Length: 156
Image 1 (cartoon, rainbow, N blue to C red):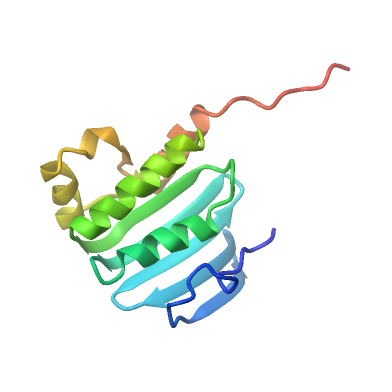
Image 2 (image 1 turned 180 degrees about the horizontal axis):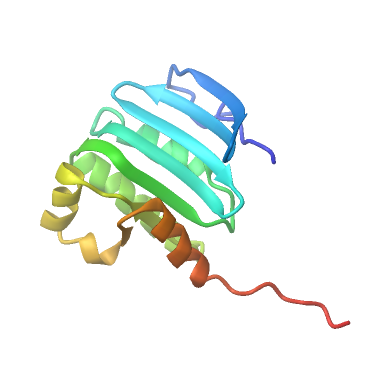
């Protein structure tokens, strides 16, 4: 399974540590920019992006760029927000832009394990029910995959 490189124009303004390795759940790409950590796992079920730390005005554009660069067209996209401890309006707008872009492509963006402050921001902004939010990564993939069209079988 190929890993998309973030080297070719995806995050040119970011000094980052990038590692690619194969773990028990598939290829993994990491970009750590304090205080935001982004990890992408390319799974058979789709793309999982693990977001941890803080999404704020200093790094919300990096979150958006990373997701745009790492997502595979046509694949289920799940953001695991369990490790996201803080989100301001910039982080909120990044998620809303990512969601709008996914809808324009006819795909969905699924948010999993939204907790504490980020969850409260989504509720106060009135967008909680407008987004695909799930209690866990497993449920997010299960729901997303249940809405996919079954593969077309060739007549035999």
